Length: 450
Figure 1: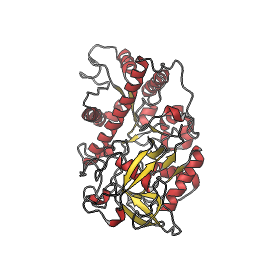
Figure 2: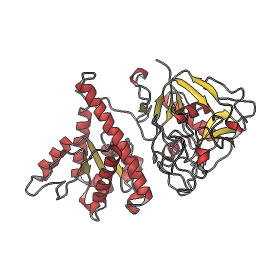
Figure 3: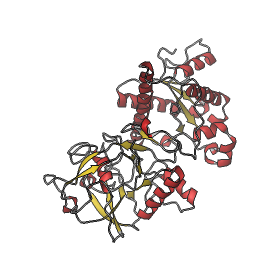
Figure 4: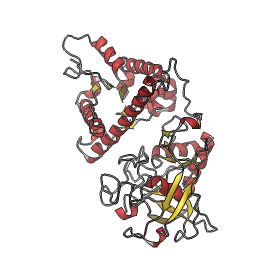
């Protein structure tokens, strides 16, 4: 019988768990969250063991009790899930609980088997639950569920998912503490329905530095992190080993206003939506997977066009970051060779010779400011025209331009480059027409001071 209050409620069909894969996934996920947070994470599943429903207990009443007690709801999305009256009812009940709590981040969907309800627009329109769940950020396990449970990619993605759940737990705890201390009042009515194609007019004053947010509450809109104003010693110091001349002279840059920088490089999910909306051809993916993998084979003009389109859709000013903005976010107030210290390991970033392809964004730890993949994975386009050194470089954080617009700066290193290329100061030049399997980009956004 159940003896522990559940942290999460797993909603699935027994048909989908005939081989025990979902039960094994629950145990792995519970362990992953515990490893990340250092605390137990109990996921309720209606199985006949000590963690599920005990002998003689009323099955329906116990499910309702566990659903009411759970902080999070984890639906395993399959065709059987959407066909199951019980699963649909569980989702409806938890959505009501979520609305009552005034939140919209307590449902953590796992995409297990391809569902036409989520892929075909006409079916999604007809199915209110599918439409609602499709507006959430899904964790795609359709390929991973077929891999060996102890494989590197499975363990890597479990760690990433565990980190996201820990972040969600922290948000809930922060909100509860604020309510307990009388700083905020609990919501007594459902919040207004979110629209997937309209800007979310959150007041600038409600955000503080290092908050993550989206301008539109939809999975195709990139997550941003608000960065504070501050100073940056840009470039490599003379004592840093193996630094080429194009990283000097080191100079102080003043970032006078807050701005937002992408939490991750732009993913195929985000870039493919842009292509569909504008009629552009989608870039190839080397058969490494799309979804949460960083978009590749994107040249400078493609990246700039994406930022311009996103600005129009959100009514906010998006752009490629200047070199100074990029390095400011990468260093996260650290003057070591990497944001993690003087050395970088294969557990902290994707660089040669470890994986030999791109990895899903967020697979490695974030830096101190909450930004992922600033080292390795893919090089990232910046606004600046390439110059051989920093002589006469701007000191206000703006991009350095010139009459020669044929080459731009890329930063961060990549999966195919060695660890030295992933240093915070490392920079290279690339032709604006270059499309490569190791170059992507992330967005920056103007954030007006309050």
